[in-house]
Amino acid sequence: MTPPARAALEPLDAISERIGPLDADAMAIVARRLDRLTKPPGSLGRLETLALELAGIRGEPVTSIARPAIAVFAGDHGIARRGVSPYPPEVTRQMVANFGAGGAAINVLSRAAGATLVVVDVGVGGDPTTAPEPGTARPDTPRVVDARVAPGTRDFSLEPAMTAAETLAAIEVGRRIAAELAVDGCDLLGVGDMGIGNTTASSAIVASLLDRPARDVTGRGTGLDDDGVRRKAAVIEAALALHRPDPSRPLDVLAAVGGLEIAAIAGAILEAAARRIPVVLDGFITAAAALVAARLATDLPARLIASHRSAEPGHRIVLDALGLEPILDLGLRLGEGSGAALAIPVIGAAARVLGEMATFEDAGVADRD
Image 1 (cartoon, rainbow, N blue to C red):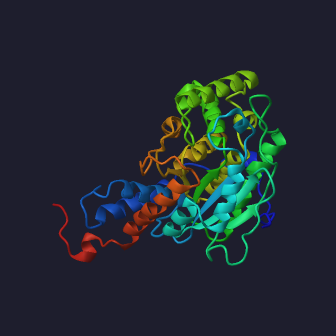
Image 2: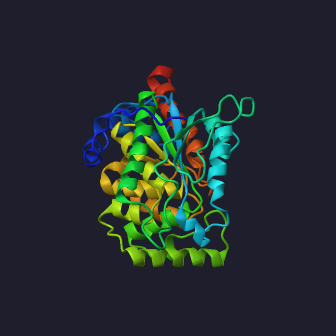
Image 3: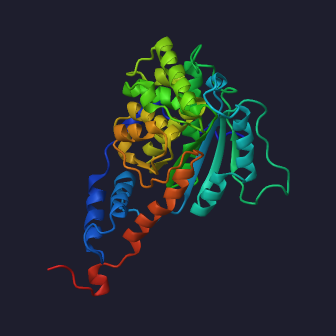
């Protein structure tokens, strides 16, 4: 598949100006409506909070989610050669092919959520993913975009993962995907990831930006044992000592120890937020990308929705830093956008409650004294 159309985008350093506080007037309108619906005040709990957040992000009451989409960004990691994952690096490319054929968990869950799925190869090693043979894939298979910046990152235990130019190019890929989806009418964007080794990169980013020991934010990823987790944390600590990235310069941190798909996710988050599209984060990797993006646009976190709390220890820490409370807690640690897909129907339900429930006046039901 070809990359998205090369629509003009504003410079990255200007995007934060379009990501401001939530729209208080729209939220006040929704708050008054919620209090008139046939229920005790606040009795729908998080659904009511979500309805308020959607209004604040969009700048108007949101009564339905018509065109949800999920963008999954994929990239390989040189650090994977250091034994930080029980899976070999070639699994990234194989799973992207599985996405393209419609057979992965995210395919199933995005179909269940009624969400358009786009898979973006930002930096997968090996041959580019090709479309499946006719007759071998489901008719509703996702679009697979070849937007490869490089065939994976470098081993950041030895050298920076990316150059500054590669980092910016990957961010641009994410921004263009979000812009394209916005033009197509996307009104809720979930983001996901695929990349063997990317929990290591995410842990390194979070440890640096939040000034936390690597052991605090490093987990099992795709299934490491206790010794493996300790080795993984030691690799991260050594890499951060080698590069000493400045936490006040988030793009430098991203280039030193990040990933191409993480950079692209950060770009997609920024572009969607600037276009008033609510962004649904998946797990730890997307939260790490959001942390980078939030350092570039300080009002960004209020425009994000955390779909779930994963089993990765660093995820809770990042969500706390962003001030986000997840909707679900299902023990997920898959990635791919799976948590985002599961949360989309809940978010849609919050919008429909606002738009479809009767008020006390409409229903002829007595309100409180």
